[in-house]
Structure formats: C-alpha cells, structure tokens
Length: 87
Image (cartoon, rainbow, N blue to C red; front, side, top):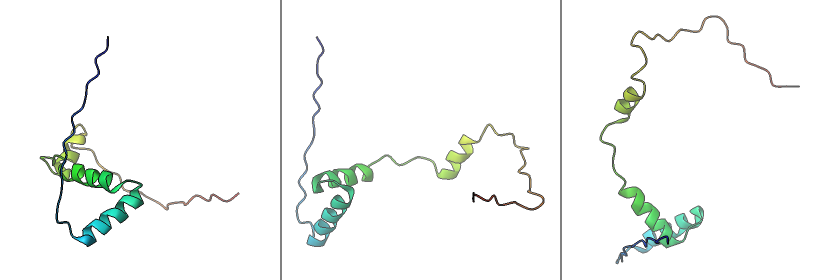
C-alpha cells in the first residue's frame, strides 16, 4: 500500500496594507493571471530565496575554469558579409 504524504501549509495574515499597495498587487496579479493571494505567495517566495554566496564574476570564472589560460580570442580580419535573406 502506498502512503500519501500530506503537506502542511502555514498561513499568514498581513494587516494595515496601504490601499495603493493592495491595488497594485491586484493589478500585478491580473497581469500574471493569478489571484491576489497567489501573487502575494509568489512575491514572498521570491523575496526569501537564498542569496548566492558568490557574485556573478566568481560563478562565471568557475564555469570557464577548464578553459586554458593561454586561450586567445582571435580578431576578425577582412570585411564582414551580411547575409541576405530575400528570395
């Protein structure tokens, strides 16, 4: 027999939100095709995402760490021909 795992969801109540904030949240939800509640959940999830410990430059350096240090980017010589896509 397969056991079903139940998920527990927390609830939060936010009071005293400015009317213009609520209005903008409602507009944003409509644009994204969400309810206001789902839009608020999305915003909260995004706001508490773990922040990378290293910057973009460090991440890029790691990504290309296997490229030889003597790798040179060659300069283009001559004229560049722009292709024509007409029939």
